[in-house]
Image (cartoon, rainbow, N blue to C red; front, side):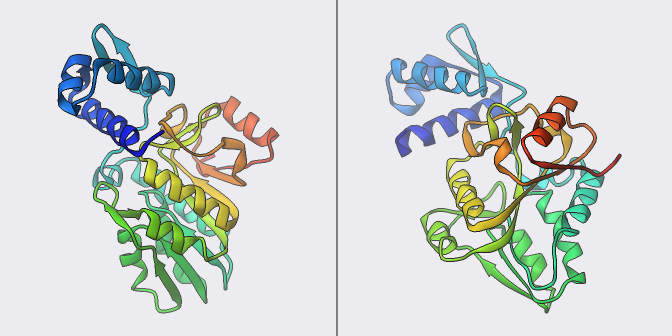
Length: 257
């Protein structure tokens, strides 16, 4: 898939998030491409679970993981995210090297790092890096790149090249969508690519998510669901998800049982 195609499809998703439905002819004029190209985009997005086709266009699939602003996500499910962050921090040891991905749940890990010594933390999140500046005993490495204003995060080739030079004990991975078939997904192709490199650079992958993300999917794959080592979530995880993941060797931890 070309960069131009990916960006156009991301823009279609953003329009759907803003207005709820789109028409083929209007999109064709807006992007300056043929209606055949737009129909191809919509077929792809429908196959990925992002949209529902309607006469002459498409409408939102409410189970799709949209790219919502971090300032909004941070207010949602706040109490359970705090509990998830606290539980995730229990898997850290003095002297560890960590990657903390951007996201409202991963940010809740940071307050619990004060109990550890000699940590090295790499992050692509500006808000998390700012929080970490208060901790004298943590070496903070910030990935460079292009800013995603919605998530206060950085992505791009500069970040990817920088990250590829390191190896870490653990990556704490944020989640936009978690589906047994579609895997762990996000609506932003650049961030998905960086997340994949984060996973490759870490010995252990810990995904942290509240239960609202299960059954949601987007079109940029980060990891298949069975490729993580540990999932920390709440009791809204569907029982068949929990059973299947456990059978696949994923350690599933439910914080509010």
